[in-house]
Image (cartoon, rainbow, N blue to C red; front, top):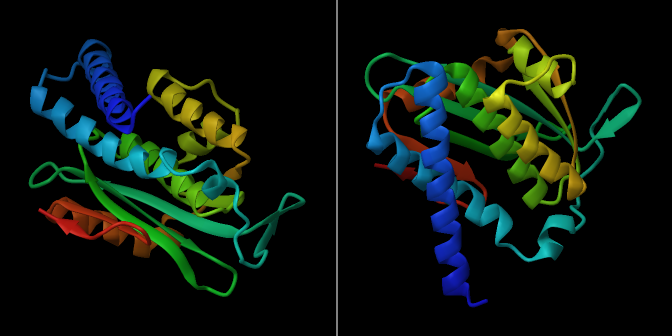
Length: 220
C-alpha cells in the first residue's frame, strides 16, 4: 500500500469516526448538530495521531536515556505527568494541558491545546490519551499521571464502568498498553496542578496548539 493511499485511508476513517462520535453526542447528550465541530474534531485527531502512529515501530520501543524517578504501589515510574482542563462559555470554550517531568524536575515534554470538547471531563480524557501517546512515542513505558478528577481516576483504575465516551478513551489506552506502556492515574488536589490548569485556561482565551518536543507552536 502506497503512502498516499495510507494517508487517504487515515483521513477517511478519522472523518467517519468523528461523524459517528458527533452523532452520539447529538443522540445521547442533546448536543445541537454542528458540521463545523466535526471538521475541527477530524483535523484535531488527524494531527494528534498521525505523528504518533506513522512512526517506525522502533521509535515506539526504543530505550530512552532517562532515570527512574518515582515509586508508587511497588512500581517504579520514569516520568510524572500532570493533566488538567478548563472551559469558558465564551471565547474559545474548552482546552487542556499536560506537563511531564522527571525526578530531577526537568520538563521532558508538555502540551497545550484548544479543543471542541463539550465539557472539562471530555477535554481531560483527550489530555490523558494525548499525553500517554506522547510518552509512548518518546520511549517512556512507565508513567504516573496526576489528575484532580475522581471519576476519571475511578474509570482508569477499573473501579467504575465507563460510559460510551470513556470506553473510547479506555480503548486508546488499551492499545498503548499492548505497545508496552504501563500507566497509573492517581487523584491529587487541584492546587498540585495549578500551573498546568493555568495553561489550559490560557488556551480558552486564544486558540492554541502547542506540543514540545517534536511539534511546532501554532496559534491561529
